[in-house]
Length: 138
Image (cartoon, rainbow, N blue to C red):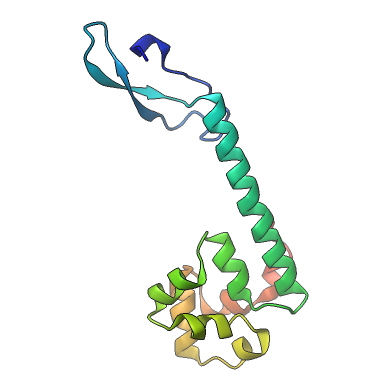
C-alpha cells in the first residue's frame, strides 16, 4: 500500500496515544514506515481478544469469591498468564502451582511462598490473600 493509503481508523483502543509503524511504499517506490492509528479489521480483532480476557478474568474472580479457586486463579487471568508461566516466574513446578489454585492448599502456604507469588503480581502478600478486595474489582 502507498504511504497515503495507510489506514488511520482510531477505534479508541489506544486512545490516539500510540501509533503503530506500518510498512508502505513512498512516492519513489521505496519501503518506508508510516505511523498508523490502526485499521478497522485489526481493531475489531483486538477488541474481541480483550473482551475474552475480561470475560476469563471475571469468571476467575467469581470462582475465587465463591471459594472454588484461590486468588492465584484471578491474578493469573488478570495478568494474562498461564500456570506454566507463573511456575517459571516463581521457580516452582507446574504441578505445585496448579495445587496452589486450590483454596485449602493456598490457605496453608508459607509466607516465603506467598511472597514469591506476590512479587510476580507486584502485590503485597496481604493484597494477594485478601479476597475481599476482589469484590470491588471489575
